[in-house]
Image: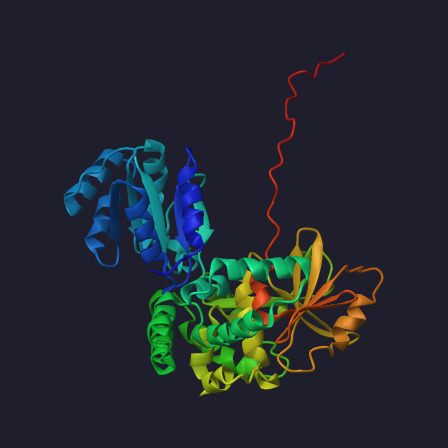
Amino acid sequence: MLRRRFYDTLLEWKKNPNKKALLVTGARQIGKTSLIRRFGQEQYEHFVEINFIETPRAAEIFKLGRDVDSIVMGVTALLGVTLVPGQTLIFLDEIQECPNARTAIKFLVEDGRFDYIESGSLLGVSSKEVGSYPVGFEEVRQMYPMDLLEFAWANGIADDVLDHLRRCFETEQRVSPAVHEAMIRLFQFYVVTGGMPAVVQEFVNSKDIAKVVAMQRDILSLYRLDIAKYAHSGKEKIRAIYDSIPAQLNDKNRRFMLSAIDKQARMVRYEERFVWLRDAGVALPCSNVAEPVVPLRFSEQRTLFKLFMADTGLLCAAGMENVQFDILNGDLSINMGGILENVFAQIFVRNGFPIHYFTKQKYGELDFVLQRGKQCLLVEIKSGKDYKRHAALNKVLTVNEWSFEKAYVFCRDNVEVAGKVRYLPWYMAMFLEQEQIPSLVVDGDFSGVRVS
């Protein structure tokens, strides 16, 4: 059984005595249903699951809206189960197929007898169908494909090894050579396999890359069918954008060019299509920033962007013929730069970072610029042996008014520190995480204020 970090998120939610309904979003095939099902069966005395695709008539129950008792009776009658207050989790899967269930959540949560988890794909692009959102009664959490840490668990990397790696990351110490080489090999496997749980399980079981690629292509086909099913307009434009991602990332500058799709295309006509792919969880936009200073969102240039796939294994299977063979034989040369950038985009987004890059003729291009609290982190991704050549990074580090404390260069080699630059092996990206917002309780008592 694959170990997922999101299980801890579910446990934290369950501990809250005043919990809301938990809405779990994310792309298809990333393991939402199986993980929530396992959580419900392990953590509750009673677990009830309604899948609105497999049981479409269940949607009739939720047309009753505010009438909670009638909804509960409808669920028990449909499924032939008993719902025990305080001991039951009701899981509403593929909830995008039943907008009335989203509306009814407010009243079900107010009723307080049962706990509720909702899950579904493409929720962000189906939002127009929901009549009334349960604002204040839902807690939304996004789930992603399996990350590199979860892939390491799946492949039998022991916790003490991972603890050793984290300590090396935090103290900037070199990793023992044998562990380093093993983790580089694991990272190469992850690039090819990606994080779709069924694909990862097939890799763990068989190590057969042909079977892995076949499963990945099936998932890509499913995503294209979703575009046809859920996109209310512009299906052809959305599919054209999605299908062009591999070629765009294979280009030298990797910036997404609409002219590659249609020479007459204009961003104003396509912008909603990019948003659709982002909200569906299958693409990761990475906007340019005018300056690498926080807050990065203030200097976003949204018409200049790269577009990554949400899973690098799918990218490898999408249009880069036989690239898996080259990667597994250690060839992550300059021609693999787009693939490498994609896997780091996937890791950084999973670790809580909005992703940006910086390019300006005066300085050159930085692969990623990340905001961590009040810090701006400069990140370069290097595929070859010349990883210490980074002219753009050197120039940006010398700009006094930007004042950076450190920068990261991820490469094949072991840990090394040179001035402000930290050279880290590729796999250590899994430890570069977003800063957690600390709890801050303030004195808000104004009862003593009086007119003198």
